[in-house]
Image (cartoon, rainbow, N blue to C red; front, side, top):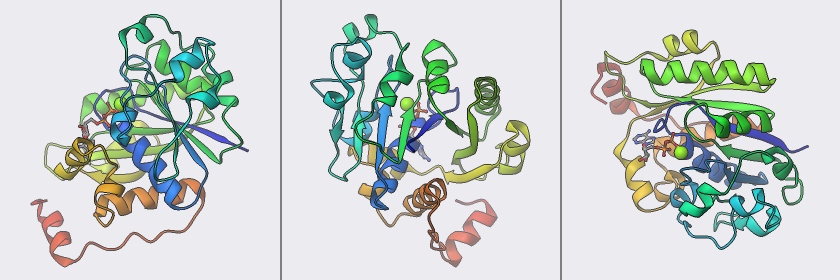
Length: 255
Ligand SMILES: Nc1ncnc2c1ncn2[C@@H]1O[C@H](COP(=O)(O)OP(=O)(O)O)[C@@H](O)[C@H]1O
Ligand SMILES: [Mg+2]
């Protein structure tokens, strides 16, 4: 049975698209049949993260009934299948997110996992995405506004009967002013399943239009994405340890 998993968190810029593209890539590396869908209909950018921003047919065409989802599904060079959204202003004006669930149920074949990149906020578009999925992976940052938005997203998901897998705490830099993973866990009420540090190489990889796994496969964040992907798919993956110097810096807060 295909699992429909939304990656959401309420706030913009926390790393939802980054998590969707990298997790999708990591799942493909493991040989899991995965599809990533850009359900951010107003500000789509999943295609940019994967280096394929312009597509002739997109999710917008599918939602308008002008195309079947098979026509809007593209194969990334990693083997990951991608359903992008349209980036034109016309697409934005003429498309409603209603019907997303039906569209997703028609996904080509029976992939193991469909990862859905959600829009920011908690408007119609984001709620439709939550309702269309079986499971939710929250993404947040270690600050109060992001965590408050994640909490609201979790409440809406609970109302919609969507199972919450846990929270990815992204852009963590061990600073005193930041919320700790324990505090985030207590506030959101769901376990923190992965902590991803703030690293410039993440922005660099987007500039190169690549996932971090593609750009720097041995980077510790790449390993953490593989660890999370393995957990999601019920596989084994041991995240290599980062060495004494890194650990010391982390403990002393110099990271
Ligand atoms: N761990 C990280 N360290 C540094 N920059 C990050 C990290 N995660 C994401 N970013 C950057 O933050 C920006 C917003 O990320 P994005 O995934 O587009 O957020 P969202 O989809 O939630 O709006 C991007 O430029 C991305 O490269
Ligand atoms: Mg995004």
